[in-house]
Image 1 (cartoon, rainbow, N blue to C red):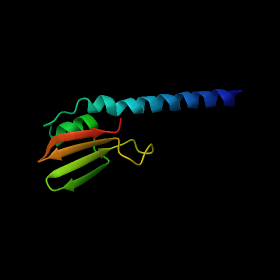
Image 2: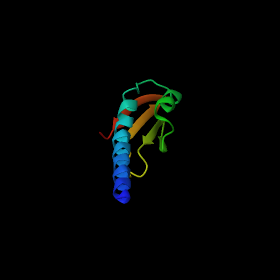
Image 3: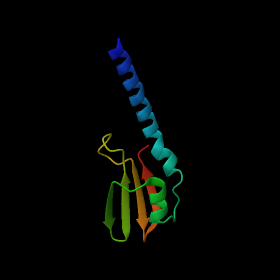
Image 4: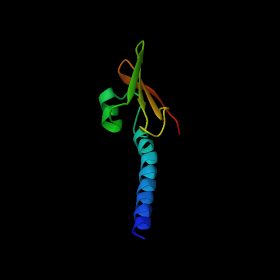
Length: 89
């Protein structure tokens, strides 16, 4: 009996975690604007999990580790300022 209760609590906690995780980037990305600095983006999104540089364009990648191998958010910087963003939603 106690084992079933424990499993139900764990399942409920997992579902809450997944639901909260799905919404987090959506609320954060709505605050990103063209022309923001890297520091402003970091203040909103935190550190990116990966970055690439091509010419004067840098791309920051965000995704929930363990959920996917493909980024969920790409933020593009040109000359150090946000020049675009792509989301996988």
